[in-house]
Length: 487
Image (cartoon, rainbow, N blue to C red; front, side, top):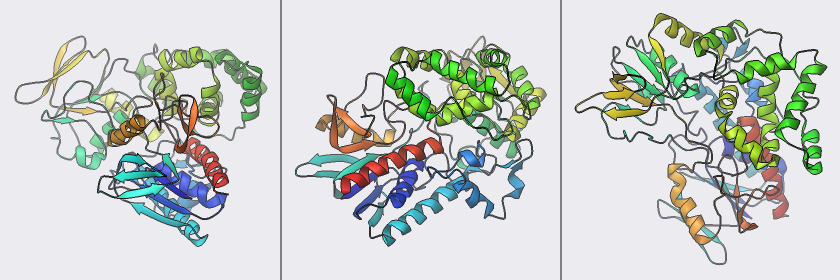
């Protein structure tokens, strides 16, 4: 069997690693990716050291069932001790170093696969179209034609969208990464407007600070909500919010958001802790003044309360499984009313960067500007930004990630070709319709025999970016499916 993997970011690495572990009858694997940073995806390119991995090593393994895989790789590097976050008690390296881990994992998996008899090749070109005769043929931008038996879309989340039509205006940066390039020419005294106040905005502020920036920085957003601050990791084990419990409730037809809340209450009750106090804090995410919340959370990094730690664990571990099983009314509620809270929880700041942000806020160099309604390029240079007043920024950097289920720009020609060929269809909620059991693309409710979807392009994935552990678990299931087919 010939498997085509379209995308060589974290999802593609996880699938290669899982295929190497799955065994199966050797065949051919071709990986396609037009990026100059193959295996790293958008987040883990070479960049400034200020852009840190934002999660503890035990949650960043790209190998399913082996939480310590990344940690072992990290411990084998003797030059990373300087990146210890004392508040977390963890080594949190620049994201470029995590990119090295992904590269090493991909190369090791390819070596194992070749040693087992697989033919593996990497094509540094985008897949832009398909044709179908006796088999499916992938068309690449360089004119190649590659026939495959199975193809996996593992293309990630894509790049930010220009919501204010600023592309081409002098001083506007739509794609901030890698920050080493996009921020290098910003004058130290310039007023930098950052669209968004999430983790990417925090990265930008930390990178500007590392560059010696002295001018004002403004986070411009509708809500002004900052990410949560990570707490020092503690060893916890979910006893009620488990895969078995979720599957059993779904089988009975009783899995709802209220049911998940009850399971979370049971987790905290078993630990002798109060659920209502924790729930009140979480629900106040968008009403509590963000600077007050940041200061309080930094002071509580060592808090003995397990609530937020358990909730983050549940979002990352149980979330991807539970999400497609919930009623659409509950999913709509979470996507709408609680989007910012869940996103803030799932993509938190490490204390190191949270301290930088608080220092900038306390000094007045960083300002949070909520309620933005318009951003326009000024004649000549600069930008007029409208919130409760009109004010001017010299530079504007887009830090708003693409919404869930957005087709990456580079993948749009291929997805259009799939839709036109009847090999896939869009789901009403967004993304591609996918069979839950096989991850195969659905067409009129029936699985397509060739195409599978891995990651956030699938309509039944969560509305937040899938974390490495979630991608690894999904990749392991898909690798098992693919190798079973090959038998």
